Amino acid sequence: MLRALGADARPVRRPEELTEIDGLVIPGGESTVIDKLSRAFGVAEPLKAAIAGGLPVYGTCAGLILLADTVRDSIQGQQSFGGLDVVVRRNAFGTQLDSFETDLDIPELGADPVHAVFIRAPIVEEVGPAARPLAELEDGRVVAVEQGNLLGTSFHPEVTGDTRFHEYFLRKLG
Amino acid sequence: MRAGTSARTRLIGDTDVTDTTGNAGGSSFGTSRVKRGLAEMLKGGVIMDVVTADQARIAEDAGAVAVMALERVPADIRAQGGVARMSDPDLIEQIIASVSIPVMAKARIGHFVEAQVLQALGVDYVDESEVLSPADYVNHIDKWDFTVPFVCGATNLGEALRRLTEGAAMIRSKGEAGTGDVSEATKHIRTIKGEIAALGAKSADELYVAAKELQAPYDLVVEVARTGHLPVVLFTAGGVATPADAALMMQLGADGVFVGSGIFKSGDPAKRAAAIVRATTFYDDPAVIADASRGLGEAMVGINVSDLPAPHRLATRGW
Image (cartoon, rainbow over all chains, first blue to last red; front, side, top):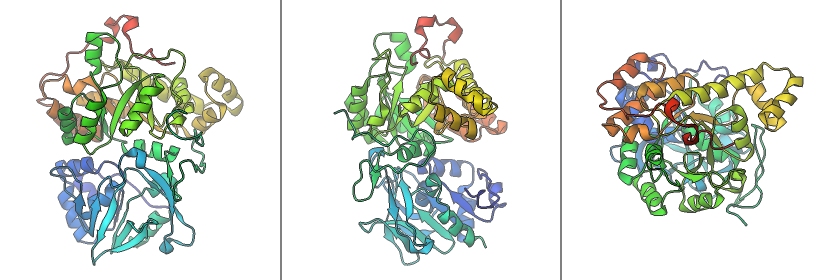
């Protein structure tokens, strides 16, 4: 999707690859695994420093969990990179049977609703003063947040092909 | 009426179809996008067979992206013989309660009631699996009928496309489970990849015959020919026992790896599980694979597939 938008996208698995990028997307996946591997391969600490230094990062689903300062329902010993002043609950909706898709109104991205797919998704339960909610479900639960160069969504724009969130993020890279 | 809701909009290929089944307050559950989406999130990862809650926790700690709950690992099913069935619901519930990663469980081929039970238990994915004794030697489960997504095995492209037509949301090449011999897994992933590449080289008029030969819907065959890949995630399974085996599967083009008996039939399961996860992530980096392969203790002893009499081969189950 980033390539389709004209960005030079490349995978990041090693610490030295972090120095070659202007921004980072942490996609969906299993947050516990991303956390463990990023620490085992020495990516976690340099990434935390880069986030503190203003690196633009967009996290979807598991990526949102990893950007949250506080994670609820994490497994023992699970850590996050942090940066977003929010409290996020993992698997907040339940099992795969509770996964769903729905339309969200997000004025920042234009008048057309964003069709969002939630897969064993997290929820933002508390938004601290530094962060700003971008999207809510009909019942008011927050599913997208922004804080400076950081962006996080509970859902997966990469699954539906709606490019607006990624375009919004790429504008942070200047 | 069988489990699930009324006939669901059937999205076999990539075509975007608005699915309003299960619509509650503008939200849709159990859509193809939601089912296939979970498999997308497992890409690049390792799914491990576990038979107890303790094993499930070891798998989660080692970095598994999901666990497969079953009563006996394939190596034991092979050794002990008898009819292999869906696991005890108590065991599945214990495993669901013990981990936070997705839990899959196996139903017999064609046994749609076992699948209904697994859905009722709240598993995240059902594997309609040749590792268990088939319940129907003609029909597979109508997987469109369910909210829970299904993964199915395939030895070739035609089999994979037929399973997609029945509603599978994820495909795994079969390999020969419970052997520790990776040769069949290699054959099946190469076959599927090779047949997809061959489709791409065909002209439009040849695709009609290709669809007939693959015994798969024409539109789906055309789509695979055009895109060069299945419309779902393709994992591999059956006989993976070492970090290098897992990396081999990834270099052959698998999106991820199922490891069955290879972990908990080995000398040091926790260490081997973590090593296989590392080798799967860094599948293209021999230095990391070498490092992951050190000091793992005994690998599972294994059986050479060529020594297995044909009736004992599991991969031939499913059609």
